[in-house]
Amino acid sequence: MRSALRTARSSRALAPRRRLATVRDRLNDLGSQMPQSGPPAPLLGAVAGLAGLGFVGYNSFFTVQGGQRAVLWSRIQGVKDTVYNEGMHPRIPLIEYPVAFDVRTRPRNVQSLTGSKDLQMVNITLRVLSKPNIEELAYIYKRLGHDYDDRVLPSIVNEVTKAVVARYNASELLTKRELVSNEIRHRLVTRAADFRIILDDVAITHLSFSNEYTAAVEAKQVAQQDAERARYIVEKAIQEKKSIIVKAEGEAQAARLVGKAIENNPGFVQLRKIDTAKEIAGTVARNQGKVYLNADSLLINVLGNEVTDDTVKPKKGYWK
Image 1 (cartoon, one colour):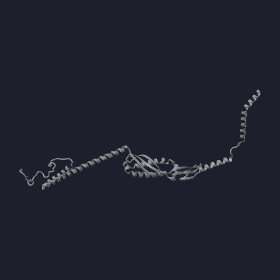
Image 2 (cartoon, rainbow, N blue to C red; image 1 turned 60 degrees about the vertical axis):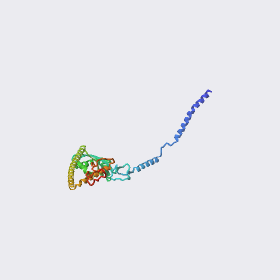
Image 3 (cartoon, one colour; image 1 turned 135 degrees about the vertical axis):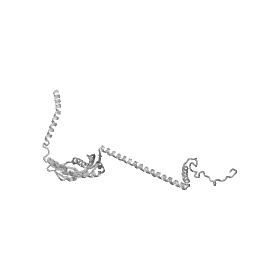
Image 4 (cartoon, one colour; image 1 turned 90 degrees about the vertical axis):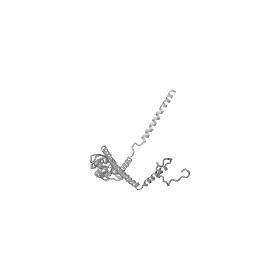
C-alpha cells in the first residue's frame, strides 16, 4: 500500500518535467526545419544598385536660387570660369561642387575720420550700394572669397575719402557737398572696378566736425549777428534823426503857413475853433454817460461872448 502511494507521488512530480522536455523537443524540431542561409545575393545587388543610382542621380544636378549666380569648383580643374544663372544645372557627383554668390545690390555704411585742407578733423559716413561683377565671379572667388565686400570696401572707401577731403577746407565741405560727393563716387567706382566690384551709388549720409571747430563756428556766427545788430541800431538811429529833422521842418513850415493865414484872414482862427468844437462834440456824443461842463472849456461856444446890438431884442413890459 505504501509503495503504491510513493509511486503515484513520484509520477506526479515527474509529469511537469516531461512536459518541458516535450516542448523543448518540438522547438528544436521547428528550428531544424527553418532555412539556415541569408537572403539571396541577386536581391542584395539590386537594392545596392538602386541606392547608388539614386545617389548619383540626386547629386548630378544643382539649383541656383533667385538673385544668385554660381560657379563650379572641381577636384580636378579647380574653379571653372563658367558662371551659372538661376535654375537647375548638371554636375559630376563627388567631383564638382557649386559655389553660390548673392548678386543683388547690398547697402553698406562706412565711417571715416580724416582731416581737411585747413587741418580740421572731419567725421564722414558714406553709404555704398555694391554688388559683384557677374562675369568675374570666378576671379572674385579665387582671389577674394565670399566676403569680398568686407575685404575690399572698408579699405578703398577710407583711402578715397581721405584723398578727396584733404583737397577742401572745412567750410567748402559744407558749401560744396554735392561736388565732394560726386568726386568721391567717381574715384570709388574706378577703384572698385579693379576688384571686379560694381558700385551702384555712393552718398554722404553724415558729416560732422570736432567740438572745438563747431564752437568756433558758433562764436563766429554770434559775432557776425552782433555786428549786424549794431549796424542795424546805428542805421535806425540815423533814420530816427532824419525823421525828427523832417518832422521839425514840417512843423516849422506849418507854423509859418498858419501865421500867414491868420495874418491874411483873421477868420482862420474861428475856422480852426469850429473844427476843434466838432471833434469835441463828437467825442461827447459818443459817451454814454452824462457830461455837465462849461461850453467855453469844451470850445463848443464857437460864437464867443461877443454880442452885437442887432442881436439884443427889446423886452416888453414895464421892466426893460
